[in-house]
Length: 189
Image 1 (spheres, helix red, strand yellow):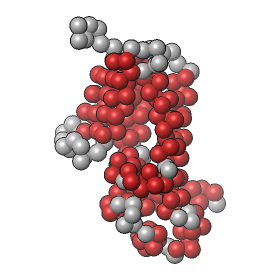
Image 2: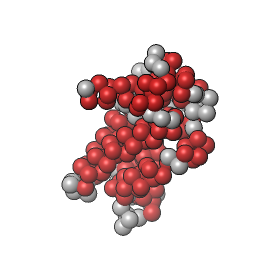
Image 3: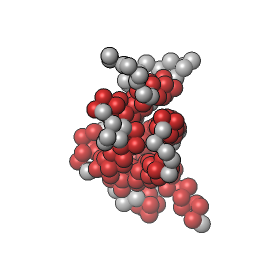
């Protein structure tokens, strides 16, 4: 029975997210989500009482996955190879299940701010920044680390990069992120 509940929860999240991305968070109602799922509002309420609950669950799911990456990296050395693997793992998350969530977050900033939903991810993003550009790194390397993460997030959104069916913007974003996170010998000198 628990498996069905989880499947239903994920299905609700997926359908709600599709609608949020397609028409915006503010313009999507619980009624529309229920209709698209072909369930009653009461059945939807069993899992999520509000749209806000759906958004918070999506962000918490991303947060848990980021925690796993941070925990893995914490057990590794601080090598370039580890930083690159962190970026690859994050890229895989963004290209997979969390790509639509990232697009939703990029396109619905006012709603997220109103829901105080971004705060949940802020500390986790700081942990990723620190893994990629530690506090003792020079300021240029710290900035490159932050830009590498931004490249991955933006690269998944066709609004910011032209989709190239042959290469795909996610692959380009990963390549750029890896270049940014790699040491620069003599760069700028």
